[in-house]
Amino acid sequence: MTMTGQRTHTIDRGVAEGRELRRLLETGPFADALRAAIRARGLGLDRIRYRLRGRGCSVSLATLSHWQSGRCRPERPESLLVLKNLEEILGVPPESLSRLLGPPRGRAGRCTVPGEGLVMQRGRDTGT
Image (tube, rainbow, N blue to C red; front, side, top):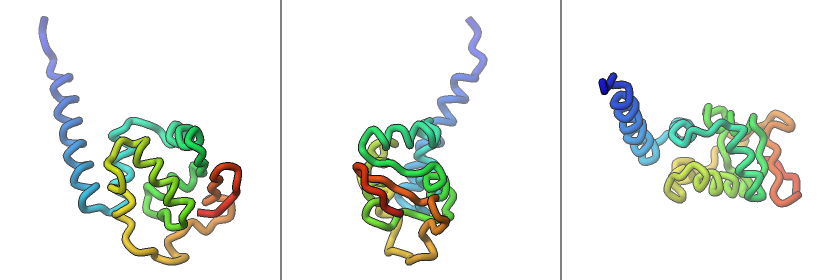
């Protein structure tokens, strides 16, 4: 049996991605760490949203996308609850993403497009 090296390359890439994720979880920025955690878990935003919904948290795909792109970040209490559940789903240490947020940035850092940041927690509509 001849080994092509593809498996080794895949393992090496996975190890490198794991190191990069650990570094980003320690140093940030938040958006880069979130994006790396999502990539490492191998889940699409639809699957993440589905799993969050199963935990009683619902967040729009646009909001998740904006969080990982750095366009906005979670700041309101309802969004921070979503983030706590997201950390569990992604398999990262508790508060490893949330501690990268730092102090609230005010309105400029929030999703402000109507409907984009809609979060529902146990049947209650709230904005992010």
